[in-house]
Amino acid sequence: MATYIAPISWGLGDLVVSLQAVQTLIEQGGETYLIARSDSQAELASRVEGLAGTVSEKDFDASSLAPSDVYLNLRNHPLQKNYWWGSPEFEAAYPGYKINDCLTTIARDFGLLVDWQKLTPLSSIHRENFAKTIIFIAGSDGDYKNWPKQNWLELESLLIERGYSVVVIGQPHTCPAVNELCEAGLQWIDTPQIGHAIDVISSSAAVVGVDTGLSHLSVNQGIQTTMLFRSDPIFIRDYPNCHSLIAKACPKECIDQSNSCAHNEVTEFNEWTPKVWRCSLDDQTRCMSSIDARTVFEFVTMNLPITFGS
Image (cartoon, rainbow, N blue to C red; front, side, top):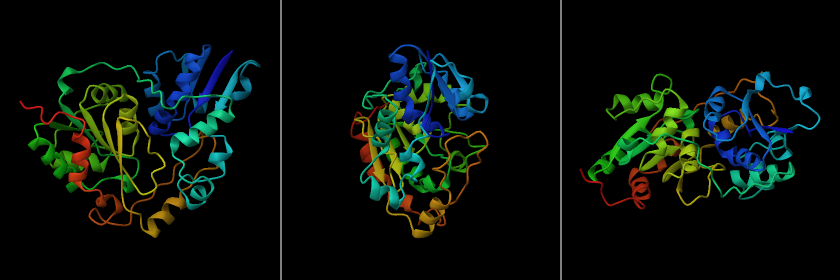
């Protein structure tokens, strides 16, 4: 018997938050295969110990499975298909629900009991030179999640004054938010593959990041993580090493744009193209600017030494 499991959506973070369901299947024995819904998910899968293999969703044919095999598509559930998570309709139906509440319901209805408080770190190679370093993860799949450049620069100055070193990871050639920080003079560490990013993150003292896959990965790896969220923070994860800061409410035009990109009825991503929307406000007036650098600094440093010194 083999079990094939597809995460809740196509992004890197969608796999990261689903990982404990994958780990639970592995621990139960039998062969567990991940259905990778994107290249980034396929890359990450190589660090999941005990996984029998990875199959690209575009190559996967559920009808060809043996009678004893099981296919769990975590996307194919009424909680997802009937609602766009974070929308007013979702909040009315499931008040206070966060990602782990959603995943608990979905997994349970598939007959899978998962302890979402038990995170299993991915395998990593320790890099001693990052032990006193705080990682900035500024880039995401949408500019509406991004924290203003000036806030990052102010936070860097506060951390350097306390004796910490700061580096940025991400891809400046594809992500404007990362490129801005590199052009502003922040130290950038090249992580051309997700495995490299896992190693750097897992070796660091702490991470500050927007709501994106690598930030969720930091939480999974047990690293002290401060995450910066928009005002519909369904992806907040309640773990001792995760500290979440939430921006003020988005303007109606942004909420309307977000809802226009809803794809909750999509259950497979073979021929799906994501819709993209941009924040209608500039850096200093967008909702994310309401999270001030000093507050972030206090959250980052409250569980770290006063100073690393030289």
